[in-house]
Length: 349
Image: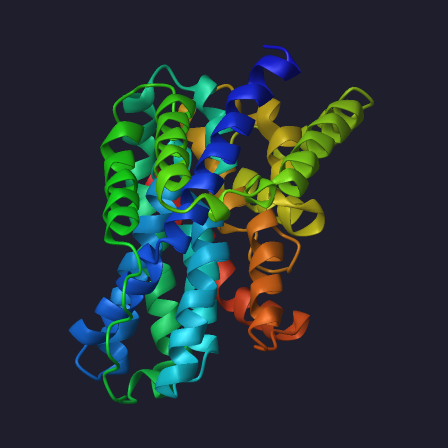
């Protein structure tokens, strides 16, 4: 499969799902969801946190890790600040679950979409993904609960639900987001329902709020970065990179493959790490999933481990929440080995 044929559906999906997420955000879908979570939690931070865990996991699985890391992060940080809760609990919840919850469906991560052609069909992907996906989320939740146990004991005053300016836009955007879930697991090429959903929302906003339709909705920088990464890895692979990685990763141990992929992702971002190592893992579905565990769940040591993490850091900076490289690293050193090893063990179960 040539480069253009592989990259085109991925880029279409990336553009479409970003437009959907941005317009849904402007329709206050995520704001209302976060505030409803605050109401349901009835003043207890641990209940609110569990609801954010569910929301972050669901957004990552259905609308990709970028949606969770980029759009949910400012919402929950703003909510935490208004409620008087230390924001790092929610900051790390969104970025960690954006990575570790992104195994279940092909649409959850660009790496999964790239890997899909190595599986016979969607069912064969889900057959090997569901156990490590559940393990990765559960391990992440446990580690977060341990690290932030003091914050989870706090209480807060329940705030009022924010008003919705345009109920047509709100319910239309909510409907598109909800329908994407079954559409993405139907077996249809994911670029199609994402494109239909994006066009539907663009049409709705054109009638109700034309000012929201701007060229800045398109993730131009992200798309350009993906294209550059594809091209760069293709060049390096043609000049001996694959042979080096094959010797390091080995041919038998799935854990060794995952660890090698995780190290590569933390050194040079998870997309080029996946692309460089794909030929090494292409001989079996289990090795492909081990590779995805490494690049998806194992990229949480460095702030440049994935594009989503870089974008998340920008949102944290904009919200004046300081996340230093050391703060990110030492917490990642606790989570990453546990989630990679645990997910690989679940894969072999």
